[in-house]
Image 1 (cartoon, rainbow, N blue to C red):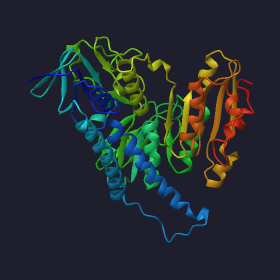
Image 2: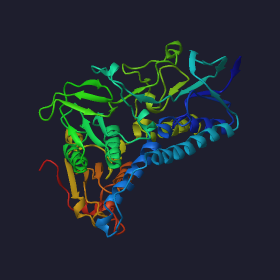
Image 3: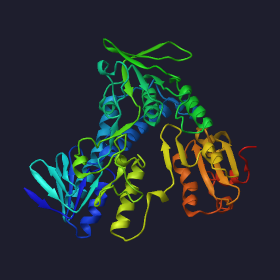
Image 4: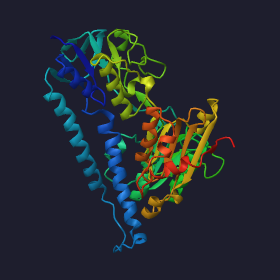
Length: 460
C-alpha cells in the first residue's frame, strides 16, 4: 500500500517528535516512524533513567552522611535495588507515554510502528506500507559502541542500556571507559554499595577536559572508594565462570581486575547501517554518521538528519536544538545554523561538572590574550553550608574583547550555575556585565562576579 505525505520523520528521539508536531500543526501531513520505544535514548536509556539513578544514589550518600548534619539514624542503610529500578522505570515510562501521546494526538500526524528503510530519496518502506514524501528527517539516534577488544565475543558484558535492567546490586562492577557514561555509573553503583573499578586507556579520566578538571574528578571518585586504573594500553576481556576479568597493561597495580559484572562504556555508534541510506544516496562518514551541513541538510535534497546520528552534538540538548534550527529554517523562514551554538554540557557525577565554551588548552591555542578567574568550592559559602565543598570554579575571558571564552564549574550546583556564563556568551556581552551584577547571597552563582574581580593572565 502506498501513502503520500508532505514529510516523513524516522525516529522519536529529542528532535523528531517536536518537528512532527510543528509541521503537522502547520497543516502538513506527516508520517512518523518508530521501531522501538518512543522517546529515543534520552527517555529510555539516557538522561532520564540515569539521572533518576543519580538521585537515588545521592539520597543514599547523604543518608550515610546524616550524622555530620546532626541527624541520627538507627543502624546502617540498605539499598532496595528492585525499588530503585521500579522508580526509574516509572519515571521513564511517564516520559515515554507523554511522547507517544503527543504524536498520536497531533492533527495530520500518522504514527507507524516498525522498521523504516529508504527505497529511494523520497520513498520509505515500513513493513507492507510504502510512504512517499518530498521531505524526510532522520532522527534514529545512536547506541553503545562495542569495541573489538580481545575476548569480547566470549565475555558477558553490560552496556549503558542493559545495565539499566539490573534489579540486583553487582558485587564488583568493572567499567572499561573513563568518559561520562563510565564515571556516572561508577559513582552511582559505588554509592549503592558495589565495589567499582574504572579502567581507561588514557593517562587521565575525561582526557578532553583540562588536566585540573580530570585530576579533581578522579580525586572525587577515589575519595568514595572507586579504584581508577589508567594507561591501560592492552585491554583483554575474560570470563571466569560467574566472574569476569579484564587484563590490563598498567604501570602500577595488578595486571588483571576481576569482578562480578562488566560495563563497556567506550563511546557511541549511530543507528544508520540498516536504513537503506545507500538507496537514497545519502552519504555517511567513516564512523557511520550522516554527513550534514550547518542547517542539517544531507547531500540529498529533501533529506535532513537530526540528533545523535549526525555527529554534530550527541546530547539531548543538541538534538532538541537541531529541531529548532530545522523548524526555524523551514517553517519560520529564519536563517538558523548549528554553527551559531556554543558547546555546552554537564557531567552528572556528584558534584556535577558544568562546562561551556573553550578549555584552557583551546583558549591558549586560539592565540588570544586570555584571562582566568579561579575559586575553590571551599571558599564558597553556599557549598560550605551544604557540606559539599569538593571541586572548583573557573572562567576564561578574552582580555581584548572582554567576552567570555568558557567556564568549568565543578561543584555543587555547577550544572545550573554554568548557564550564567553561557547566556552572556550568547549575548556576546562583556564580562563586566556580570562583574557588576548583584547576585543573591548565599548562592554559588554569586561568586562568579567575585572571580571576575580577580582575573589573572592565563599564562602567567
